[in-house]
Image 1 (cartoon, one colour):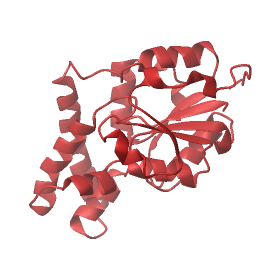
Image 2 (image 1 turned 180 degrees about the vertical axis):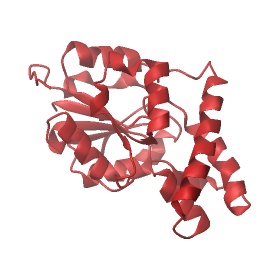
Image 3 (image 1 turned 90 degrees about the horizontal axis):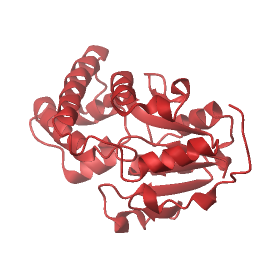
Length: 229
C-alpha cells in the first residue's frame, strides 16, 4: 500500500458516545423518541446530517430545517467535547502513528462526513496541520453523497494522487466500511473504538481489526515509495 485515508469520528477521535448522546437528544425533538442502538449504528454514523434528519422525519427535509437542527446538534456536540477533557484527545497510538506516516512521507488524508464547522474545530483543537495538508481533507460540503456511497473515498484518493486500490482506509462505522468497499479501496482496516471486535468479523472486506493504533502493522506500507504531493 502507498497511502492511507482516515475516517475521523470514532477513528482518529473516539467521540462516538458524544454523537450518540447528542443525536438521541435531537431525536426526541425531531420525532418524539430516541434513536435505538441499531438505528444509530445503521443510519447515523457515517451519514450526513441531512440523511439523518430525512430518515428521522420520513421525508426530504427543507434546507432550513437541516441547517437549524444540524447547527444546534453540532454546537451541543462540540460543547460536550470540551466538557470531557479526559477523552478529548486523539485515539491511543494515533500521534505516534501519524508521526511515523509524516516521517516516511506516506501520503495521507482524512475523509469525514463531518461538516466544516466541526472539521475546523478539530483542526484547531488537535493541531491537525502537524500531519495533514488541510486542503486535502475531504468533508461534507453539501455536494458529496454520504457514506455508504463511495464518493468521499474516491475523492480522497484523488487528493493524495493515488488509486483507491493503492490506499488503506481506517474505519469504525458500518456505512464507512461499505463506502470503502464500494470505492475499491485496497485494504480496509476496522478500528473497534465503540463496537466489539466481533462486530467487524462479519465483513469479509475487512482485512484486519485493531483496537488502537499501536496495533497497526506498519509493514503494510511501501516506505521506499516517495510520492510528491
